[in-house]
Amino acid sequence: MADHTPVNSQITDAVTQSNVKVLGEAPAQSMALIYQTMAHSISLAMENAQQAQGGLQQIGNAVTSSAITMIMNAAKQFEKG
Image 1 (tube, rainbow, N blue to C red):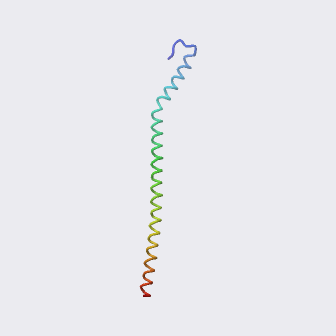
Image 2: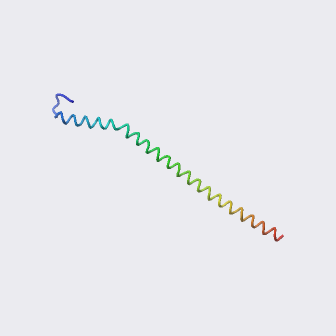
Image 3: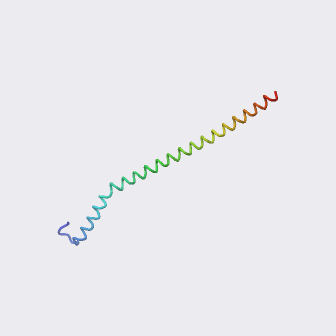
């Protein structure tokens, strides 16, 4: 409690308690922000992995289709010739 100030002691106590509360909550809030940032980064990494996997699946489907077409064309040429 502040002594000998021109301001009412109840006001200085209220301000001091507010400041102490802010300082007390700061570590928890900073850790919460770190956890949120980490969760967001991980979710972006998972999204990128899913997109890459989907792209590779499309490439695989195209290669399979092309290979089947080549096999069918080879079979037709074998029958003709």
